[in-house]
Image (cartoon, rainbow, N blue to C red; front, side, top):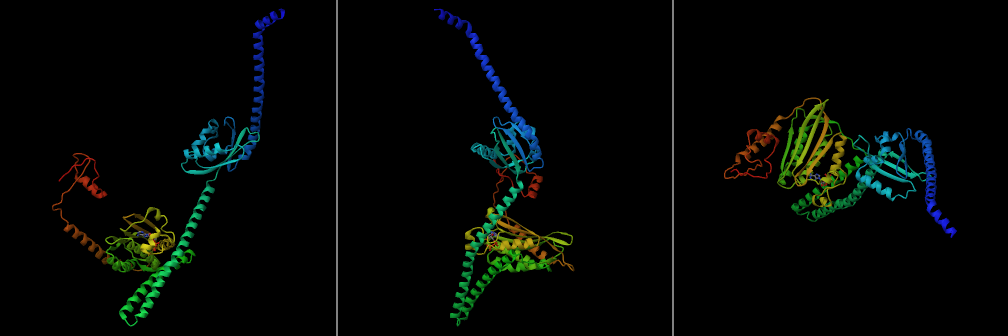
Length: 489
Ligand code: ADP
């Protein structure tokens, strides 16, 4: 009974004291824990501060910059001063918000980095490679970051470096390797194709010769077979010459002559060389000489002609009947005793696929496997032309639209030859007169009798004043396609 009274008394009077006691004990434990934790962080910060000097000394003049990132909250504890130099982002900004680093990379690159970080085991070293932009610079650079935890597993140590130069070298080497692989593949294909290409005319020649022998008493038949054998031999010779030229170029043994020659002579030769072929194929054919006041230059006439012949042969080959092939020689300007010359071969043929244009000058390349089958050829002409023009320090520009036609333009500058420069005016005049007369005839024959004309304009009531018409004519504009149409008859 007595005990019960005491317990009730304690219950009633000492419960608050008991609770107070519990609270004090908890507070003491928390304070002890807090101080111990602070001590630990202080130690880490002390360590880092201690190491900062070391990092600073270490980071100066280094190709890499360093970051120490607290693992628990990704707070940046240290950032080496050269980080700003490398990225243009001030260290304080990164310290204030590590997210600012995201601005250095594209959204896609950021996703890729985050994915790799998520998959990282957090123990072993992680190397990230990425394209990044430095502040105030729009060009992309290439960099890497190496991340690993410190010994106590409290911080991440990260090194950041720029390997743009390395990346460029690696990419160039990769490209060269790819190109070498493609060239070697093209050569292998070429060799297997060539063995077929050489064997076919050879068999043809042998066949024609044996037929000629059988019909030796029939002069007409014999001469037919001999003519066939001759043209096949000619084809074979061209092919072998191309192969020899190519191997001469590849071994660096092709040398150019420096002899005076006449550009009008070249144009004349080309004109007569292709006149009958183009006529037979029903192609409009024109060779034009524009703006010349000098015509004798010094260079390798044969090689220059070879280049143009190759362009013209292709233009003729790839242009169907009814199309046109035009060759234009133009004097651009004269500087320091040199004539800057443009030679353009334009056709209205089948054109070239845009993805092939970048490969057109590679040896042994043709647009597709069926080209050789349909049009013949070896795919060497363009590579030879390109190399010859490069030896002349010139350049070739190709423009083409599938189904519309192709234009090859060669720019070279050749020293002007000493002595008389007799520009044959009559050659040009004759051509222009022919041209003008032909155009005049077309205009004279043209009639509007019985023709209904549809004019369309999207601004209702617009006046086509004379000035507008003039401007349109000058700019080569037609009337635009309209939403509302007015019909004027
Ligand atoms: P080849 O004519 O002997 O095949 P080239 O090196 O002269 O070799 O030309 C390479 C390829 O470029 C041709 O096979 C053809 O596919 C393309 N090509 C060249 N010129 C033209 C052109 N004027 N029109 C269309 N394709 C062309």
